[in-house]
Length: 380
Image (cartoon, rainbow, N blue to C red; front, side, top):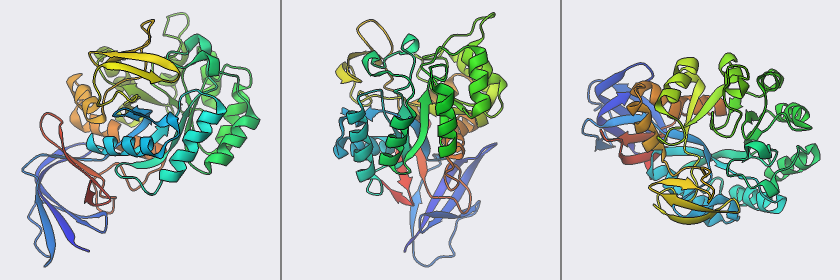
């Protein structure tokens, strides 16, 4: 197998940025990182990166659709189109994320993901994220209330059986009847237990975090807000060192000051950039059907008819740029887009540029436009 040399890259590492670096890749792995040109191999292909930024492949733990395709429609074509679009925007792995639905539609989505795993045309499927259906109607956001229900352990056991080992994250409202019992079951399954679309009080959230919840889905959105006499989920999460936070950084869902607050509280090790994108990602303004709702996208903002925000249209490379624009360093932003989600998901060979790691890499220009995406050592 041919050896690949990436010449002249600006390498983004966790605490520094190195210029004019050369990276050697063989059999899908990073095998050398040198300041001097690598010339010890007789047969190799050389890619001149012209001083552009090389970052680890980004990992989106929360995405619903892209480029006109909704992963809840049960079609393999939709899963593949999300895989392809993710790769084109610098995302090399993702969690296929559900919305609250009938059990039949959820199982159809799970089965379509199972058929695609191992055959992805672009970004790799790292698993499934179940967003619902055990969510609180009071904080439903765009989740369709007619599909929301109380936690049902037997139903969840059946879902896990159908999904084999693909479920990696489950978002729930722990204050619902049966919520704490569900946390105990999910902890036994070894998945990430996340809180959102929840009206949990500070005290209820603390109990959930003590019982095994360790993540907050699209933090600040779809949950009880902070009040000085009723601090809610977010403050409880800020106080728990083991709890990480998702952030939709699109200049719509979170004010820049809130993003900086989250960063100061958790650091790049405790924040994860997500898209939470619906099928309008990459399609532009228009009308869409998502989660059983009619959604209108205007100036890139997706809303229900009553004005409720309905997911986003942001891409991972745009989220990275917006994060830097808030005043967070590029090195920290890359950790939040790549390194931290890899660690949370247990993808130990991904999320960093170092010898021995998977060659999942993205080349960006100064405007954060993707020049190419590499997965397993191959540009896709």
